[in-house]
Length: 248
Image (cartoon, rainbow, N blue to C red):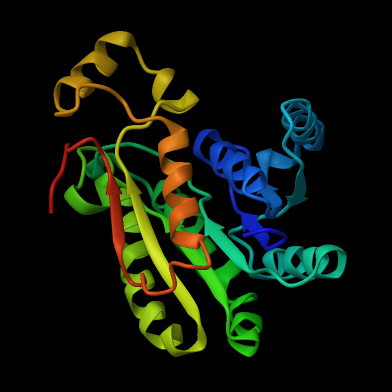
């Protein structure tokens, strides 16, 4: 993985940060895309924090819901760093509400950020990977894309679509040295999960056979495994990391 160029969308969130750290530690040149509602100062603060921890991670602003914004980001990255070898589609949001109360904006925001973004980013990278006959793509889905979840019709639909995309693209590019895989995390110890009350967290944990939340680093190590050069025979798969909460 040394000197391979890796782009991680949503790279400054809980899981995204762990992925960036792991890939950087493995020798890749890592770029974290971010939006943060245009808060570039916050992004710079995150980047400085990573540097103080020993991780060199570049940052690139993008609106993943906008095709042209993604094109500009990819061109800027390739101009500064070179072609992208590894893509981790990790950007995602939630807008939880029961379906009978859900409005069109809540539906569209989630589908555009979680699913359309994968098209918007991957479409600008895939041709280069095909030409070079090498690439590693990992799409981050969710346990709730497999089993569904109360109040998450929008989120579950988007995350189920992620793996359908994975399986289809994997077949199209398999002979070009490109692998495409999905990771479906369960409940991971991220700031978003930790922000809910302890009572709710404890209830979630009772549903996890291993008896604890997952750690972002556990997801990051799985990404590192799937994007390794020597793992070119793994494609179209969905690696579940959920502590046994949902078995398929």
